[in-house]
Length: 447
Image (cartoon, rainbow, N blue to C red; front, side, top):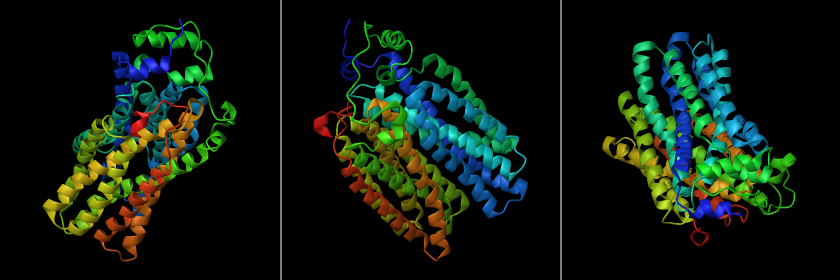
């Protein structure tokens, strides 16, 4: 039987198997949120235990982000050659081992190296789970599913931060890494049992027994099996399995690649400034340490709200206009926060809204990126976009610290970091229309 597989998935109802696959991807993204906040929560305890200076502590905080960037840039592209699922499993093993071994680190160098290894696993995994979420969602729910997946980050940060606080109180900082490693390890059998391989990978790369594997997945999705593999989707001239990275710059993909890189860089530059510095800057503005922590928690709570709302609206509004609106909304809130950072009630309300807006921006970029590339280079394209964005994440706290050292007032930093969000409006505009090689996340007329 011949069947338009893409059409049946895009236009049909999502089966329980597809919903389960998307749910697993959301949970996997929660590991990213937990990992980042786990290090932030344990930093002061590690510093007191090992008598660290600021430079050493900064090395520990940055090493995980450097690892995430490296994983996105250099590990994620292997998924376009060997499959998304094997790379996700490899990354989960890497994350679990990195977290567990971190609990037994004896000095800064050991812990920094293990944090970097853990980050490589997380960075390598994120692009693949984003692609699988996109491919197993219907047209109606694709943008919503990817937005909910992105929302996994603040959910993981909020839940994980609460658990980390309890573990620190009763068992010390090493228990936080043990917990993270065990939770990650528990996810491995779930991925083995329920997370499928990318459909586009099977049809585009045609690994051994691709037809049998495809039919097994179709039956699980309550679709009819096929007698033969569908014809490969058209790809730009120059795309080949041996040159996935170079293929990102073939023809019209070149401009899209540079613009999605710029969009991720600008968004993560502002994103990680907000997450990294807001608690400390609230204290500098005259609030207590506990109030500063509350401001940080509100950012993540807002992120849960914003990511969920973006997912809801994405099935009703065009993806690009919605993304523009998020950037404008968040930039305006950054200016507002800079003006009222020393007024407790207003600062908390605006922090909640900034969290909603900036996580919404992130969700929008995660939804937009997969539709730019053909199946043969999709994970490579996604991985490099996230990796370039992570470089902005690493750079942002350093720039903020340098500006403070040069005499900038806390509130004025938010004015400066609103500028990248405004610039991102232009880079998103230059992304153009959706790729002709990939089914769009929303109806083409709305993009």
